[in-house]
Length: 513
Image 1 (tube, helix red, strand yellow):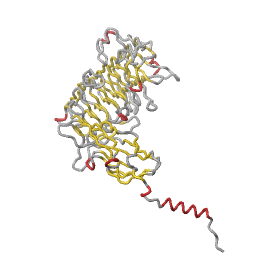
Image 2 (cartoon, one colour):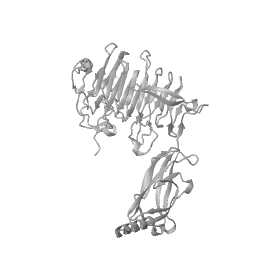
Image 3 (cartoon, rainbow, N blue to C red):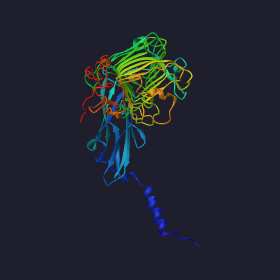
Image 4 (tube, rainbow, N blue to C red):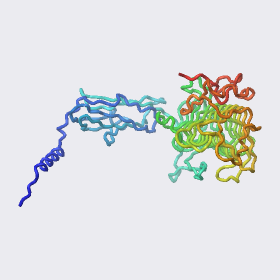
């Protein structure tokens, strides 16, 4: 006996067959009825030859009909320096794109501007995404500011490989190896005509000096930096900027991604590595941001010359340390060491240090940090028994602060010299936990601490943005020593401080409303 097929099953099969055989002719033409999430897509600023981030445009069909977009293309055609991705397919021209009723699709846009007119250092590069043609044509404009630059990078040797060096060893013992190249004689002077983009580590040859002019902009690719070899030196000649938005006199070291999304992303590039045996390095009016380690200095206390003289400068948003020194000799005036993933200032293996009118404040919020804002030791983690004398660590008219309970670490191996002093300083310190052998170092009534303020409110402008200017409610106003301030008569914004000096790099000012 034959079994009858239920009528509901037959109807279901017919419906399924009908939907699977849907033809393009069931779609209506778009006829200029598309809507867009924006009428112009700004792809921000890029360097010549460096690809942008990916930006998106959403295309809407707000009608009740399924439509077919006859074409999606770039106005400049195949020569366009933009690239599109429409519903997962890459290209510059697309035909017959379906878009269902009251639905939407994404278009992703990138650019890599490589063609510049002669004698042009930057240009506004434009194009448009065109939908349909003739009377139904709709367009969304594309705009990018592209900058030309001087690119410095390692070359391949005869075997097709690039030179590598071991840069330093991390605290966990991991060796950091990087690609490197030596700067030639004609590359040892950076001016402010064009930005510089560095791939790998640019090494200053022994007995040579790299000079950087006021207003220069140096950008580093991921894993890149500057290596100052033994007997070589670095000289940064920034000046005070009249316009604090343009910073026309400041020298700036940062990553090579110019989009706003990367403006405060830490760890985008490596470090400025001043090696053991390099002396007479001088830095004035330099901003370093978004590095792994802002400046890493290896010194030798047996050499009387300074490893580094740094003034009127700021280092912030490093993923590890803003300034990391080992056995170095550093003189710093008007220096801001802001937020960092570990310590703002770490001095290992002894050395000689003098900081006057420094703000060392770590309000890191990008994750958990273990380091204090300031750490002083006469040994290093890898070997407590391997010590070097801390001959001097003087901090005057300065701030040591942050968002941890205590922001000062003083630690000695008990064998080597451990000299330190704080005079007219603001120090955040709240002792917790059991006593330790190093507790005697924190006698804030003793001779190592003179006229210091323990805890309080510096009244910063915006710690998340590394804006450590102080407001009029700050506890550090007029707390500086005048004789000390006379050594640094102007603050980081070039305001006079001699008559009634505040602590740190800034004189107090009213906050903007």
